[in-house]
Image 1 (cartoon, rainbow, N blue to C red):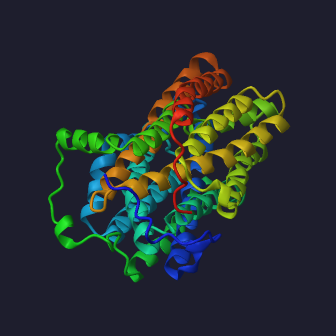
Image 2 (image 1 turned 90 degrees about the vertical axis):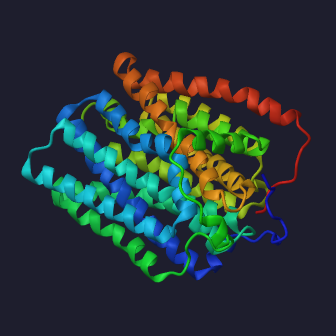
Image 3 (image 1 turned 120 degrees about the vertical axis):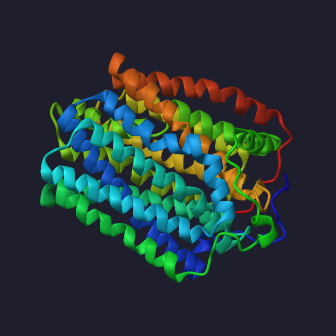
Length: 424
């Protein structure tokens, strides 16, 4: 694989990607998309918890959301390589809107059953898996190599803003509109990204000639294996896939689906305010972490930095899972949010810059399999295992295992000859 093209790299400049108008509007539309995504999660997780009170169903919420990334990551990345990414945006946004309206109907009609939750959560996961590699290629097309790390950080930060707005807006919808009307109104939040897709010229392939995009999409398992081998042949990419994969497999974001139960443990009863505040703590920490990383040149991406921050994140998750008080839990989630956005945005930028032109979507599909698809495992380790030993212990054990698993990778990177930081 080719090394990142550093010929375009300029001196450090904070918030460089925001100078591009198309990226600014994409960031705003993406923030609203993430807000809508999380409003849907907040409302649906709350109703599921109230209706079924099932940790196993909460675990399935994680599994169903991320399984499409695991099974289809490379194929959907190949679609992003082959087709206009704006069209993939329109498809995914249409699916998201349909799912929100589907939730609204079953809530309004009072007919919600477990199979409805299974169906909607699964379809929602498919839409996200279609969107993700297309969005990664689009931002690369908009800003180029020189500003890509900045664009990745800012995109991740803006989505954390959406994540933060999700609990606030979702909680307001629950209280003021009710679950059914709240879900219906939420569907409108996907419209700005549809408008962006219909009005912007970026396809995701500005640096790729048509000849390299003309190949057919191979749906054979062998093509997946070939892409995986190609990604693993680059040691830098392999290390970042290890960081993304281990963190997602063992912990991921499985605790979010169980947050109503964590909140109930601290409050002693179902409390929407405690639930929303726990979600907000992680989101606020992530926003601050993204802004700090974008501001300080010392936090330019490197494999060692990403791996070290991931190890510290695992420790923060252990702290949250065993927190003796509500205040300690909030602090742990805040720190975890800062650390997670830092190591994950570093890992994504490194992989994207190392990926060869023309196969970038496939390589990012592999990264999405690791960073998102393997969260299926965390749904089992935290959710399903939590039904047996309790969610506090299942999360603590999973995060502890993650810290141990990352240790050899940190040691190995420390022993390597230091390499220059990637473009900032």
